Length: 529
Image 1 (cartoon, rainbow, N blue to C red):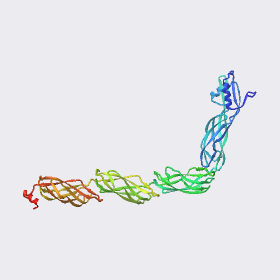
Image 2 (image 1 turned 180 degrees about the horizontal axis):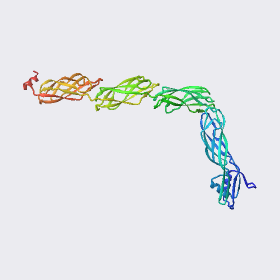
Image 3 (image 1 turned 45 degrees about the vertical axis):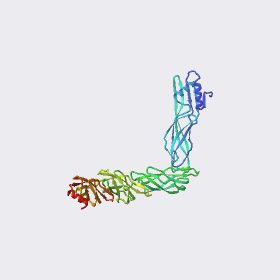
Image 4 (image 1 turned 90 degrees about the vertical axis):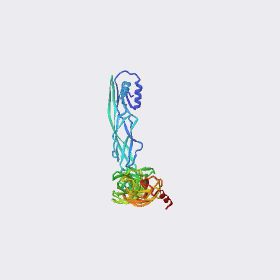
């Protein structure tokens, strides 16, 4: 302390230590005062690297340091001053309630961070604030100053008189700056993008022309197409070699197209990976172009069935119409198996379908015997090839088909056989089903009291509702009781598709009558006379 009682250039740490030590020393109660005659001295600097490149967005960490010392004067009880400082939450020599506002100034940057609260910056201490900046893509290499405006409060005076205390604060501000250096860099430019065969769910091609709009040569340059919601690269990392400033290059990418909902123009992101002049591997800022993506092909489906009956084999003819606006190459219809059908074929060619053109595909199906005569859904998928001969599936589509009742027959007539006699009986067989019986053969299955060596009869073709009469030779046992007996009758036939089908068993009534001629007739018959 000088002879006038003035303490000069005392740092905050020293002053606080002095106040704390002296706080324990008893002094007479008297008016006490404290004055500061110098504001805090705040400086700024970038912490870490201050090197940026054109086009990038980065965060600068700006350090704010208080290099000031306090020129002060105090009188009276140090203990009472210390109590006031502690209770008021103020610090001698500190910049309190500090805020920082960063501007671009003449630098080629856009400052994205607004005014920030820094808090208290004590003497010989520093705080740090992050500031996000975007460097202009056309920024020229060089060193630039970015202004920083700091505003704060500091303690100007403290006075204590009896039970009363007074704290005087002053506002201060300082305009300082930080320095950044814009390096030479490679800057990717997208000059044009073309798309080919870019359709939903297919593979297509993206061709792009890029240029180096920066000031540095890109060595071992490799162009990448970044995946997005619409496009997935199948090939990537196309080598461009050396790309000098102002030079252009072209790259092709095979891409997979997602199942986009609508035809439209979509962004395509690109990025360049390269070595700079120091051999350091870097990546450029992502730049975008745009391409048009078309809808997936669309189809209209309908079906007709032929001879599709319960417990039989039938056919379904599927008609497929291309309702889109482009040709579909090597189209196929695929059937998804489902009860009560057992497909004999599940895939059939439709050929190449131009817009509006219709193709047909035929499928043979076996219908289970437990099926019910009714309408059933059949589910199909239309498959075609994209520009890379890759399989592309449409959404599944369902069409209804009708299954008719099982093919049946009825028998009629009044065949009779005398006990002990061998006779030819006639049976009328009617096709009561809905399909044609081809190459049909009727058969009877006899039990006691009948025997036969002639149990089959050829019918040929029998249309629905058509009847024909066939004959069988039957022998009745001589001891047979005269009455009506049941003989099982079936018809084996070929359906429309050459599949052999056997009808359900149908009973045919055959009457056994009294023996003719008595014992003598029976003996003569036995002797063959």
